[in-house]
Length: 141
Length: 206
Image (cartoon, rainbow over the protein chains, first blue to last red):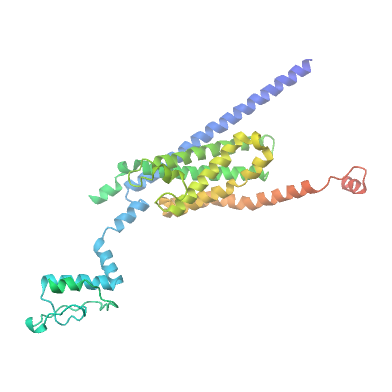
């Protein structure tokens, strides 16, 4: 009888010790999780404050717009051509040397214009395979 | 001025919280998977070790799920991304990198279902639950892919170091775990020799 009681007490003590160990493991894991989160938060925050955040640093790099526009213009020759034509229209007289007017529109007589001013040659001659219809409005207006 | 506005962290608190929670979730889930593989492959044997490892595995998994929930919920408050409930809960429904985010959502749901089903394993059988629980590794792998594909910090050096440290142990242990599982299955299939039979006598003699 005494042995049985002793065995039961021993088993209870073992179960109690086991629960204590599990509780300790859970508690430590909880604090470890909190620490991991806090460290990650601090690192990301410091990165952002220091201006080294991966996402925001990319945005900052992308801010110089003119370079991007220039590259895009070279990548799309048709759009580049149209924008150039608008530019000529506003600042200089329409140059008769320009041959990209569409055939459907009546081209103005070149004799009416004074001597053509030497227009700056484009840096990259981007021959448009199919001229855009935009010049129609510019030549008539 | 624009630089200051871009790097002003007070306007990105939800975003920072989500990123930190995602990182914490990945750390804890990877550790949980590692410990789970150690339990399954019986890589750490000893008196009381199994119970301790199981408690650690469970605590890490619960921590990972809590961080995962925070990772998604905190994104709801982000004014820039503004994903909405559908964007964080339904795979491939969001507008921000739908493929990578969708894989992450699938992984998250998989981890949640397979992890929390532990508490209902008596309802559909422990063996069946164990068989399903093995697929947790796949969902964890989806989470890793999600972190590489759509993680903001995926290109940061510190993140890559952490990622390698977390991903390598499970990847190394997974083949060992699969091999031990195959071995155990093969042993189970073999009929037990009778004590009186010749093979049984031989085996006993050995």
